[in-house]
Picture 1 (cartoon, rainbow, N blue to C red):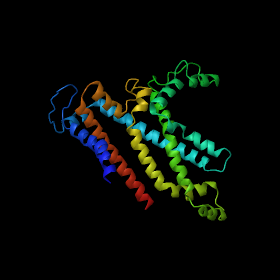
Picture 2: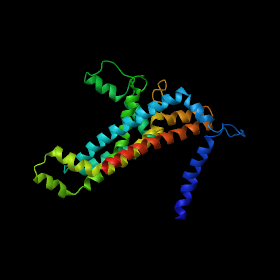
Picture 3: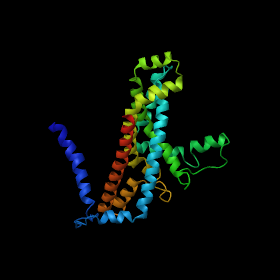
Picture 4: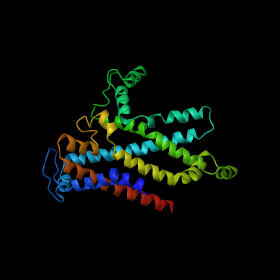
Length: 279
């Protein structure tokens, strides 16, 4: 186990412990900057920081919305790809395309789609008569966050679809044959057979999606850099600004630790309820 354990300790556990240590210090940028232990001072400052609570609220809206919409869209796509349709193999390959693209490339591509003057979205909506003027999707205070959420859903669908499709293929055919003999329709087969069989996988993938989404950084940074006016500033963007724009490493580390604690608490409650319902 040693060859596998050493990289994990060096590249995962080590930085994690060092980040937790920084959260209890006044570490700042600069050569030979003195670092002193401050205890819970950084966490106290967080509780009174309106910008932190704003980014945390936006982060929860983002994470919950993307996770739920991503799951619903992926479940529908997985059910479709599980059918015996023509060109099913090609469709499965195309469904994985967003997964193969780096977040920076995805962000740049969608910035072009959302471009107010040359974007394909405005042009298409105007041709259909749905809008009469160009919309600045990523700089409008009221629609910037929903526009970014759409990109997040599109980006995360492939891995969720693959997991759900694999679980669908593992459902015993005999169960469907038995309820078909009993005269069950499509909805009853889905509700009484498919969904219960997928429950453990659904709990696992939605939990992972929630953790990935609330820790999202690169995609949103390329799209909006947290703008306009902080309307898309997720917690990790806020931590990045505090650390690398203003140089407050200790405060940024405390923010990261606080987010981890909140995520673990929310995730623990969610998993506990799901497992209780399953039992």
